[in-house]
Image (tube, rainbow, N blue to C red; front, side, top):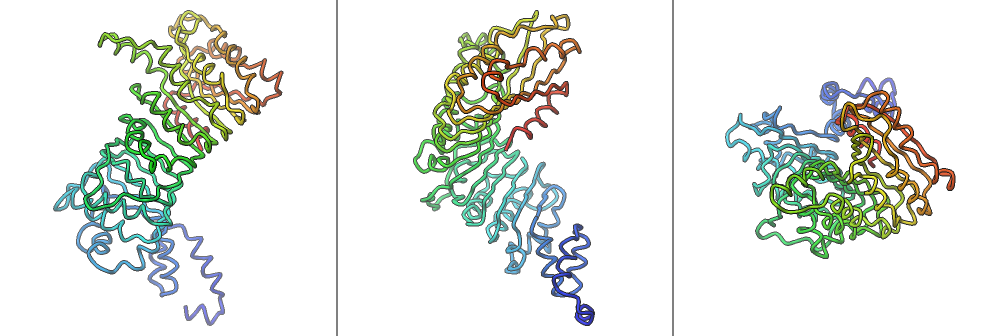
Amino acid sequence: MDDCKEKKLPLEIVENIINVVDDKKTLKACALACSYFQRNCQRRLFWDFEISCDRDDAAFQEGGLIHTIVHTNLDTNVVSLIRYLKIENRYGVWGMYGGGKAIDHMLGGFIKKLTALEKLDVRGAGLELRHGELVNGLITVLQLSSLRELKLASLEFFPIQIILWGQSLRRVEFKRVMFVPSIVPGGLKKPLISPSLEELKMDNRKNGCSILGLDLLSSALGQAAFTKLKKLHLEYRESEGDRPSDIDRLLSACQSSLEDLNLFLTHDGMLQISMLAALTEHEFPAYKYNKEYAQSIRLSRMTSLRRFSTHVYVTTRDGYLEEEHPFRFLRDLFLECSPTLESIHLLCFHRFGDAGDQNIPEVSGWSELDRVLMSCPGLREISVVVCCTQCTPDQRAAHQGVYDLPMVIRARNIKFERQFTDVSYELNISLTTRQLSF
């Protein structure tokens, strides 16, 4: 720094030089140069902080960063600099005394000391949420006024009710999380004010919506967390998805505020449900199952809805759609449409049932949808992505004549976009989910 002063190098230039450094090894070296560099480099180093329990258990050993912060008072600078924290433990830790329980105990103590966290990302089946210290740590950090975003992924036995302590949370994402009914730690009072969530993204695992209803939506405090929800993304890849009534309870809580709804419901699960019904000697009519989902969504009650996205699975045999085809689901869904709905986005997975199937499928189901969309008063844009997996070139070409909406386009002058692809299922749903999601 003395050399900098002699050359009269402005501090603003020095700060800009440090700000463009994007390598942590270089930042660590700069931090050792002088106290001024140290403060600026530490801010960059700890702003976005990651704890990987699988790859770096040394941080939990004596002398490691996590161990030192938990067991000493030398935490003033570091914990105040962390804004985004990612904790990952995919496989568990076996290389230290106490194993996973000791790791989770220190993680709980570490996150309790954070003072300015804005975003928290916790993932990995190796984390033992049944240990009280980690749950207590999460409850403590959720109460920070600075914390706006929470992302949880690949967790087991997560007590969903603890998100109610996140009074300042605005965005919550659950990905492959197995929920359990919440058990409030002894001596801890329930929060008096719930968060005002604006965005919720959740996929289906172990009936997540059912537990959401039992643990949160069954109380006035829990319902209040969703009354200002603007963006909702629900994804169901498992055929044993939640009941339509569970979706209805969630949508009822946010029906006046919701602007963007993205539902990836499972439609190919209908056949598996029918097989299960045959084995258990119970009847679950496939079309009734589909219609119940449409009725539970009830777009007409959503007074602020602007954008709706969903996907369907379409299978033809001998050129004709199967009896319980998903176009009926879409028709029932839009029969009573929200007057504010402006944009509809559909992802269709269309496959022919047999290799020798006819190349030109019937279009009556899609034509019904064309007529129904005429009754959507505010509609301005429709986009359709068709994934033609396992189809011949002639069959893919035939889809051009199926996925068309001539009536609504001519009558309403609506912007209509189509995209046809033969990308594999997993890749396509991954890419298109990002396109259609918020």
